[in-house]
Each structure stands twice: as C-alpha cells, then as structure tokens.
Amino acid sequence: MPAPIRSLDGTVVVVTGAGGGIGGETVRQAVEAGARVVAGDVRLEALAPLVDELGADRVVPVGGDVRDEATAQALVDAGVEAFGRVDSVVANAAVGFYGGLLDMSPEQISLMVDVNVKGTVWLARAAVQRFRAQGDGGDIVILGSVAGLLIGGGKEAVYAATKGAQINLGYALDRELRSEGIRTTVIAPAGVNTAFAAADGRFGGGDPASGHFMEPGDIAGAVLHTLQQPRRMRTELWTMWSLAENH
Image 1: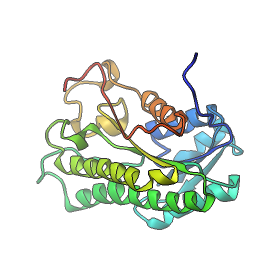
Image 2: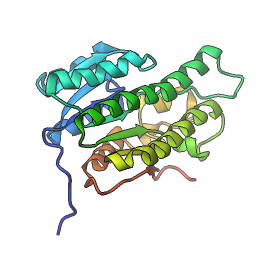
Image 3: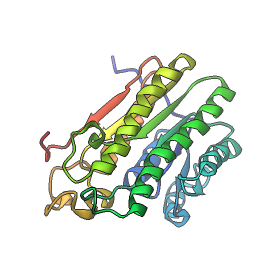
C-alpha cells in the first residue's frame, strides 16, 4: 500500500521569504498540491512573478519586513481575508552573513538576529493565535540550518547562534502545542544552491551549481512532505545534506 498522505487540497499556507529560491519553490509546490498560499517577502515586487505564474486566485502577495510583528499578523490576516482560514505557516525568511565574529558590522549582526529569530517568533505567535481560534490544529514549519547544530563550517558563529535559536524554539513549541494538535517542525539543510548560500564565500572557491549540492526544490519538497504527513505524525527536526558535503 502507498504511504498515507494528508491532502493539502484547499488548505491555506503562509510562506515568508517567498521571493527567494526556497520560498518560491515552496509556494509552487504547495499550489501544485492544491493549497492556496499567502506569499510574503520584504520586496513586494519579487512576488509578482509568482502571482503571474500561479494565479491571483491561488497566491496572495504580502509585502513586509518580518522583523516587524505587524507583518506576521498581516500575513495571517491576508489568509483569513482571502481564503477564510490559515492551516500552516512556513518561516523561511532568513539573513546570513559569513565571516569571523569581528568581521561583521553591528548592523549586520542585528539584522541576522532580528530576521532569523524575532521574525520566526512573530510568525509563530500570529499562527498560534489563529490556529486556536479555528480549533482544529495547524502546522508551523521553520527553515533552520545544520549550522544551528554546530555542524556547519567556521566563520558563521552569529548565524549559527540564530539557527540554534530556531531549532530550540521549534523543539520547545512542539512540547508546548502538541496537545492542541499544532505541530512544529524544523527543517535544517546544509548547502543549497541558492544566491543566499553562495554569498560571502560560503562554498569557498567552488560553484554550488557545478556540484552535487541540494537545490531549492529539494528543500521545498521536504516542507511539503512534512505538511502532508498524517497529523498523528510529527517530525521535530529534519537535517538534510548533499552528496557534495562531509560532516
């Protein structure tokens, strides 16, 4: 018999950082699975191609900075206004600067902490309020990183700290919310062939496009698989590595 799959048809998913590689692929795969999506990004114009490609009846774009608590509420409110509810949220928006502890500016450090940690907390809070109002559970998926497990390379201490915070937040929220039927999952990939990961020499002198690194669609597929698990199942932490990496 085939493995049981929870249908996403007619469900509503909120995705932050949807203008980037992993976020955009998550939106596409969610729509393909029958979901309707609220796509958020700090650059509203980056969402226009998704709406054009997938249809305004399936994708609602929302511009806003996840560092602002009001942005999280606006994303959830957009789902309720357009589609009547919100079933899942995907905290994908992230910022990373790679370098030694003294190589980054205070502004860069604050940006990483605020986007990666506070942005995830604000989205989770807005989601839990909505899930409780609906009364039938929900999913919170957090895009972390293996760096948060102290497995990443050097010169990413602050980034690793923010990703560690996301992982611990996910574990703690799962313990807090599971009795209400609210699942929390952290997906923690290693190197992915995106402009985000290629920045600042994350791959050294190598070209991620030329190696066996993961692609954005691989990570989006993990998000969709998580959401499609039967609600009786929980995957608290999913680490993902490519064939090109050793750990």
